[in-house]
Image (cartoon, rainbow, N blue to C red):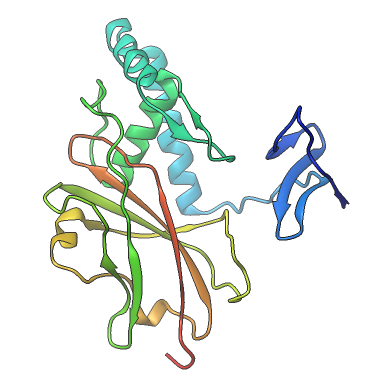
Length: 227
């Protein structure tokens, strides 16, 4: 592994090119040989692959040109953060898949046309641990509690408390109704699934009833010893 220092031409880099991966840790930026992760074949992975295949096929063979144009137009006014935290504009197909895959996760039917506002507001959660319930959302920042939809909850495997950053994988645990955030605290992980002394990272994605999807919010909590 070689450490690198960026100059005026390149400020930062993230991701892989060919057989080289650019990354960063507490010591700074570094380059390593790219390793291909092993994705286990599971019922959940098979289900997700089926969803993606269905959405791409529907876009290519069923969705009309006028509807595809609406997704393209909506994408031009939409932005998401990339790995470096910079905003980028998706394609119409990217936005269509992002929106409808999120709706599939909530057991909802796919949309042929984009929502009026394709991106929902961010969630600002504060996580706490309760000895009776488990991990709970205690506060939600400036989030509007009158919004309706679902909150997709993903959690990491138990990590050491010294781990400061987790980019994946995450396991989807469950959905809760956004209306549950109107009466806090709201339980997002039961006590039986918590590991004493571990640090858990959460990825929380609000999906509004009209199909708008918020950018993921990442947060973590250190669990006590003993629970």
